[in-house]
Structures are given as C-alpha cells and as structure tokens.
Length: 350
Image (cartoon, rainbow, N blue to C red; front, side, top):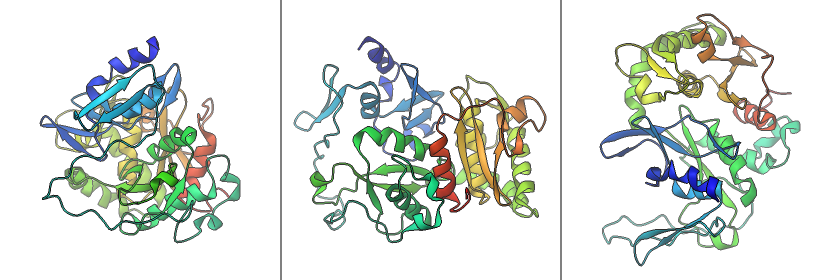
C-alpha cells in the first residue's frame, strides 16, 4: 500500500468533495481540470478541478483508484479513511436536512434495469457496441445529449468494475458541457439497483464570462462557409491565446478572459479548451490520447478529422490540422473512441 499512500498524500488537500461543474473554494476559482492521472503506471480517470495551479479531486475517487475505503460518519460528522479495507461503493449516510431546505423531488421507484425514451442505438453503427460500450449505455448518454437535463433522466446499469471506463468515456466529452454520472436522490429502491446511474450534461454559470469573451470568435467562425474553415479559424484563434508548456495548467476560465501575453498550458489544456470552442460553435469534438499526449477529433464536413492544436502552436504550422489519420500514435482507448463518435454523430462510422 506504500505506493498508493504516496499517491494519496499528493492529493489529500483536494478532499473537499466537489460535486460537479465550476466551484469556488476559499475565494479561488475552481474549474474542471484536463490533467491526466496514473496509478502504478496505468491511467485512471479522476474528476479533477484546477485551483490556483493545483489539482483537487474527490477523496472517494482517490480511494477507488488506489483501493482503500472512505466512509462518512454522520454521528461525528467526519470522514473515515481505512487503508486496510478495499474500496466500497456503499452509499454515504445522508446529511441532516435543515427545516428550511426545499422539499426533495417526488420519489420514484426503479422498475427496469435500463431506461430511455427512445432506442437511439438503431441509428448507430452496430460495430461500436462492444464490452461495456453497449446499446443501453449508448441510449442513456444519447438521451441526455438530445434532452439535456430538462427531462426525466435516462439510466443504465454498469457494473462496479466498469465504472472507471464510463468515467473516462464521459471525461473525453467534457468541454462546452461538463458530463458526469450520478444517482438521483429521489429513488426509493436504489438498494435493488446498486449499479444504476444517470448522466447529466451541465454548463456552469461561471463559464458565462468565457462564453462572452469568445462570442466574437464564434460568430466569426459561424459566418464561414464550411466546417473546415471554422475549425481552422478556431485552431488559429486558440493558438493566439496560448503557449505550450507541458507542466502548466490553463483551464477555460483562465484562457478565455482578458489577459496580457499568452497563457501557458499543456497538450491536455489545449484539447480541453478546443472542445469548449468547438462546442460553442456547434462542432462535434472529443479528445483522443496516447500514453503521453492528447489532441482532438472533430466532425467536419461529413467526416471525423484530427486536430492537434498544441502541436500546431508549438511548431508554428498546420502540423496536424484536419487530417484523416495520424501516424506514429497509438490510441489508448480505440473502442471508446468509436463509441464516442457514434454518440455525437450517429451513423458517422458506418
């Protein structure tokens, strides 16, 4: 457990247990971080937030990644860490409700393992449905993409050992919206469906200043004749705002605001900020990664194409911009990549 404890020590200050979206802590801006995390050399997905140049994560997520147990003791209002116990998905004890707190949503009883209003999977390439990336997961996420959070949640069942895969999948979609999976609190029989979850797609109000900042650029891009022209313009626009530094952290709220000089960021920051730009311009976009590098795939003029904004900026040329393939790079999650393509643009990989 020594290696796991070393991992924990570096993140223990991030145990503030943020729930999702942009938040504030001690007066500092916190927004989703694009940094990658590894445990014993294997990449893991942690829902992280960048605050003042540091990464903050949920303590329970660290426990799951490193395999130690984290529980909440309501009687003493304390968090218990047991390094000699394996991680458990047991639901934390509920907090005491203030009488002034608004009433919770009406209770609902789960009656099926998987539920969505439409079978969206019929529109997709059936070849992408492999392993955990099945039709039920596709329908639950696709329903959220279609409806946003304005309707009853679609849900699916994913086994505990596959939770990490689903987290990584949703993390690759984050940009204009922040995607997460959650368990609504108004379900009366969750104990019968412990592997159940729904998906949310939210954009924090704290991103509004960033949206206002990029509005002229987005309007300029949307006035262009083709998606290719839009993507090239947004690539050049982001290059004008950032400079490459693999040790730096530069989130949406830091890059897309008034500042002097270029904001330094790593490849993951370029990829995350580019997703935000593409989302605002209505261009489907995801991240793709090797073991040490991240860039983007965009859907432009009827096909998925590669865009590596960090490399384009570093080399001061269109190094990888709207190319169909990239040589010498191995996608760490090719099955998830194909599944994501179909989620954003059904039928696009046929």
